[in-house]
Amino acid sequence: MFSLTIVFGSTSWRLLYKDEKKAEEHYSFAKAPIANLTEFNPSERFELTDEFGQRATFRRSDIMAVMFENLDESKLGTIEYALHQMRTQVSGQQRAEHDPTLRAARRGTSPSIVSPMGPNGQAFS
Image (cartoon, rainbow, N blue to C red; front, side, top):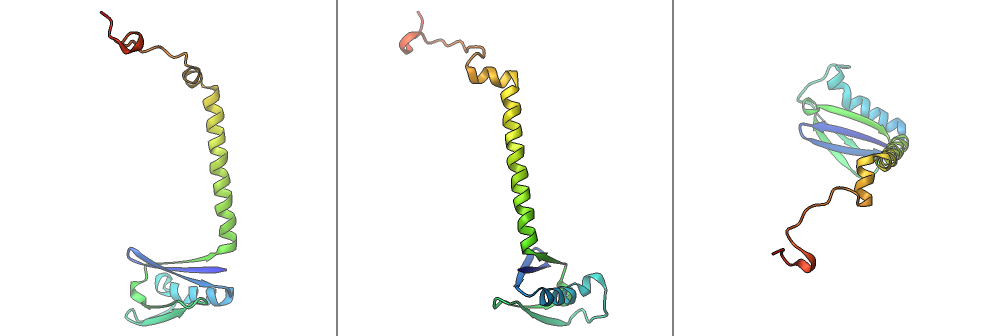
């Protein structure tokens, strides 16, 4: 699967493709105004249709950014990032276990707080 994201200001639209060649073709067409790869009429409008029934019509001068993504590969990247976050959490927990201040706080050996209340919640007299 392949994704083509086209950005207009604060809005973006994502088109999805099974066929890499078609996705690459649409990417090249959409990025032309940004990369100045071809001469074009900035007011020209064009339409892209993905393989899942989405149709998008754009004015070429409104395109601010275009991103092509191989979703199978980016899935692996997402998994690797999640594993990195898990490793970071485990490392942080291990460091916390060896931190003297945190270890003392867990054992309840931190300094006591003096309370004006005596046993059974009664004030000292």
